Length: 400
Image 1: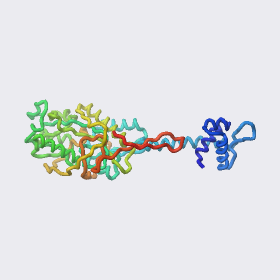
Image 2: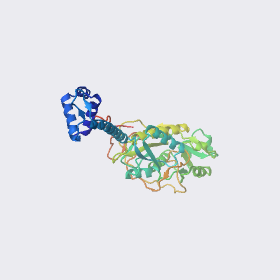
Image 3: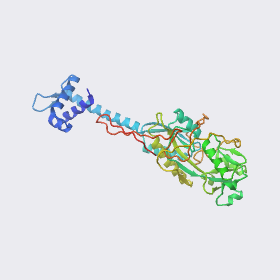
Image 4: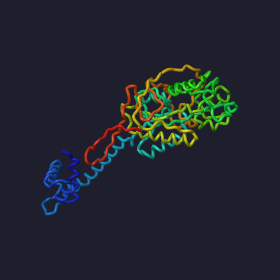
């Protein structure tokens, strides 16, 4: 017996105290409704209505059942609503990776916007480099991560990307600092200060390849993760560096100049597993992160360039998986994260040191699946209604 359906019928009869009117409200005939109530009475072992008089009345058992049935169906409504919310990503915990040195203002804006749009969702932030995030996504230790492109991992879906145009950081006394903009070829003969390759191998290789193609082959590559250390190396004449300008323009010891032709655009997007229990809130969080990051970059005076809009996921070329072998690590790295300012507090450092597996990569993520086997669709399940039984579900491709 479908107890909940029988209880719904009972409540209508109990409120109307008239089988004919109740049948009309329920869209059925009176005889089937009467049989339904009789079967419920048999199941519960007691009469629910006094039918001995001309007017139908509730018995003591019926009055008790009416109170309990209303509470039970209300609880069912709450249960279904909670399950819909969990399925749609409005409840639970989302484990999200963020790049090192993400500015506190960005973290605050991201968490605030997530709380406003999904109050029941807890966002657990974890600080990790792009390579570490790809490894953690592969093992299921993260649900989503903010990564720098191109990626060297496979099996990931990428949300909308935000591109930050990079300029060059020079000693304030450099002759190049007197120019309005600097070409990469103008840096020929200089060393370069860059983040360690392990942070974001694909982007590291892209930077060096772009420099070489433009006529700038660094004599030596030094590495720095801390902004003050990077500025110190630049000030000491130990190399030029690349930065979005958000931090460099506030540093009196150095000069920041745009690069002619804007050849270096650091693209950041959210990425999450294409298969294997992906979090239902991933796609919405990816869109939210792109909005917050673009707003923060713009507010800091950074020239923002968006990646191509939503569309079919691209087919991605295989990554080279090579190490350039240029220079040696003399410090720690910067530039692979958001480049938005000081190191954030309140996030837990990841010390795994893991690197992402080799595979496909792209620097134009829209909503693409990073896989050597071709694109895969992203599906979202929608549900509506509760009282009419199990709601229908619709699966279909959706692009960020």
